Length: 313
Ligand SMILES: O=C(O)CCC(=O)C(=O)O
Ligand SMILES: [Fe+2]
Image (cartoon, rainbow, N blue to C red; front, side, top):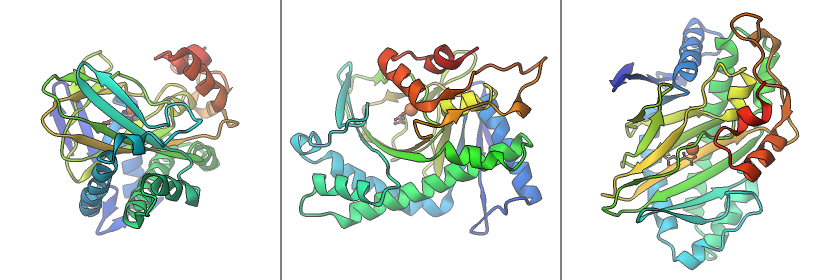
């Protein structure tokens, strides 16, 4: 299914059939893999329909709302040595945007520790809801990465390569408050491998097309957005597009989003598969690099185009 928004076709896929995931290796799986690759090449993102998750998404945002409505001083207790992970408040004109990140979510204790910091008396429901959604989203990243290997017709051993590109998982929780002064958050590409995002019913995500035009991405209540990050773009020799995106705050209602960001370990060497390079159309565009060095470069320069500056040939 596709829908036309301005002059961009936004792909919306469904990986599930009769409650089951498409069977890996089946004709339908292969067909879907081609479509996923094409969408990631042309737009750098797509919508993924998950009808079974509508109730979980609703449940999730009830929990997320209670978190952001805690006293400011409670939220400020969430501090992390990882850049951009501590609780932070950003102002765009008069609109406030608040954000938390939880690192290493796959470690069983990180969501628990975060929950206990926010609710010393405990909040098992919050913890379970977050962990459940994180698991779902990590599974989606795994599927998409395998589909990309399939979509390029790469040998199967590259599956372990892309699996390594999702060794670290971070959750980000965002809140955009209500204020009649509309404003946009900073446009950026995600520095990770792949981002899976969902939101409450308030729209606001915008993507920059390759031709340089911002357009709205309406996310239906039964959909996630899957966004290609810089690490995957570099691995694919720049064939996959890391879409620049931002949030246009409309100020009528609070907007909450929940994102799952998968990334390589710092020590992973990202290297373009030889099969994605040829002399004529696809000469090598990125030198091999360690993910952690790229992130250090980005943190110190905040360069929007960090991956190309750091590793581009
Ligand atoms: O909140 C959104 O819709 C986008 C958030 C985002 O781009 C991010 O956290 O990297
Ligand atoms: Fe982002």
